[in-house]
Length: 115
Length: 111
Image 1 (cartoon, each protein chain N blue to C red):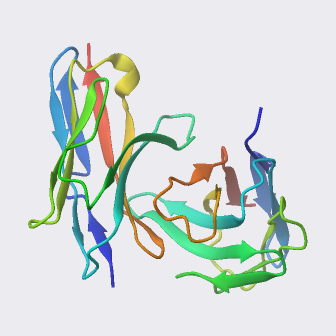
Image 2 (image 1 turned 60 degrees about the vertical axis):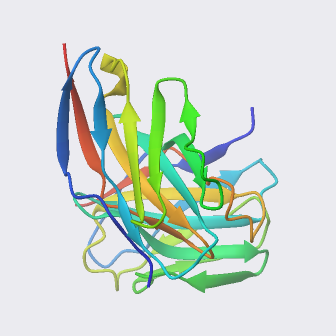
């Protein structure tokens, strides 16, 4: 079945440590997105990529980095510069980069916590 | 900037009854799309219904329907014959050249 796979489901970060969240899709979608979800704040856009080797900052990119070396993969690194990383992270994809008439497909999320 | 507002953080409904979740948005665009997503305790985001702004007819999907008022920039979701499985967080979303999400409404279904 086609879909988006996020791993791990739960992740713990020590102070000063960088951690990477994986997002893989086999839907052959062009665009991919990373959102952060906090209680009472809905989904906030961290980064998005419309094409391989290109990505754009979202509303809350500080303390995060991404790469898009392959169409199917869009990993998110939470760096030590992100002082409040505890949140639920959702990865999403969109069939066409400009296909905003279509709904995004979402992964099952990664819960990141600080040790 | 586009914003999406869900003014009801929490709602409850008796099983088999009808409930309406509110959503308003702010935009200067004339062509855009609106979505309702459901996020159950499993945290997976599931598309419930979609509405194109250029269509006057309200979208329906089985027990789910919307009341789309373009002039008022309102996009409410009506759930009929509520079931226990409808209990979830519901997010309203807007898209034009980017996606914007509301803060969500937590729906409780009372047996």
